[in-house]
Length: 71
Image 1 (cartoon, rainbow, N blue to C red):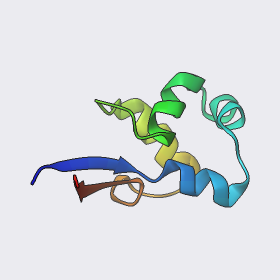
Image 2 (cartoon, one colour; image 1 turned 30 degrees about the vertical axis):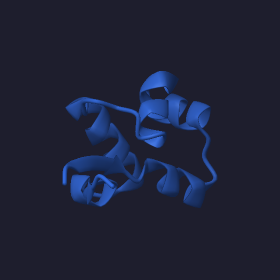
Image 3 (tube, rainbow, N blue to C red; image 1 turned 60 degrees about the vertical axis):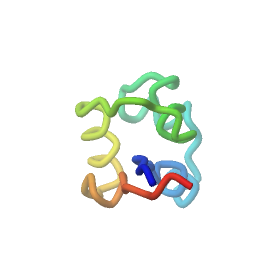
Image 4 (cartoon, rainbow, N blue to C red; image 1 turned 30 degrees about the horizontal axis):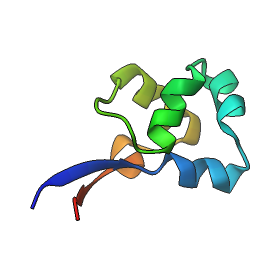
């Protein structure tokens, strides 16, 4: 069975009542980049974007991104 990288960004955004446009403005990352992480449709992780996201929510990378079994 293969594994996938899963981003919990939507959970963190929902908990703070943020939408994609708001987060984009707050951290200076394009809405499309954020949308990819929210929908888990990304194929690569941009380290600088991941750092900005994790810094904003004050979490480490292992809390934001997890590895799951691809069912």
